[in-house]
Amino acid sequence: MLERFADLSTALVADACLRCDVPLRVAPSGIGAVVAGWRIAGRVLPVRHYGSVDVFLEAFGRAEAGDVLVIDNGGRLDEACVGDLAVLEAGAAGVVGLVVWGLHRDTPELAAIGLPVFSYGSYPGGPVRLDEQEPGALVTARFGPHLVSAADVVFADDDGVLFVAAERAGQVLVTAHQIWQTERDQAQAIREGRTLRQQTAFDDYLARRASDPSYTFRRHLRRTGGAIEE
View 1 (tube, helix red, strand yellow):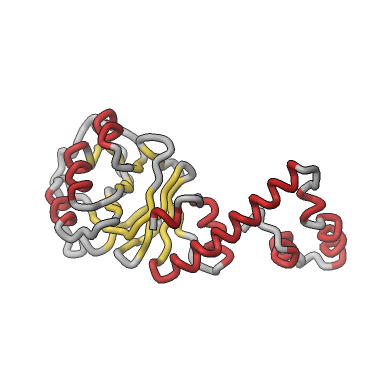
View 2 (spheres, one colour):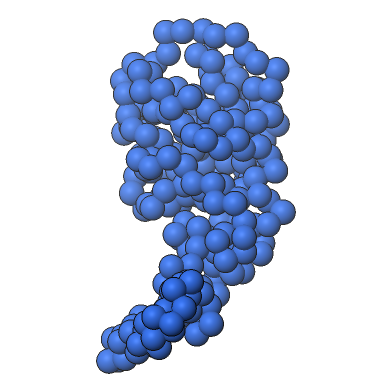
């Protein structure tokens, strides 16, 4: 999955979701990689955190090579729920990255380990609570407004994180590659002196919109084969 995502971005995948009529499930803004430039793509390995690392160790027992640990810590900003030992163990279990709805700690160690970790920031203190583990703790994870499971794939880069149903991921990636190629061609044409307005027949769009207010630029782009918005 990471190989297929190598030349793409979450922005392109998001546009492809719109093009394919796939629900757009983007993590709340503010999430970022511990080290800029890290990228993630893989099947979701969901887990809910309750204050103890044991739930992670339990999840690793179910991990398959290429999985991404998606941690639901409720978006809490008063504790770090993952650190260097958990990340090292994740790598040993074949996990290729972690995406945390919450905070991390041990930042220098995580950078040195090199396994991609995305979170909402760092915090020195670990959990001081210990809540009761729910029956579905290893089945689904909440990430902002989204509920994810092993039936989903997660993509992450410097623009953010998003989730796509695994059964639609192949179609979305093919479409994302098509959009990528179109945008590269458009960018090259601009450098060669053909403006984006010329490429998209923008004057024609304005004329059509004047006579038909329902004629949107997105509809026009699909008619002309452009790729700017999606």
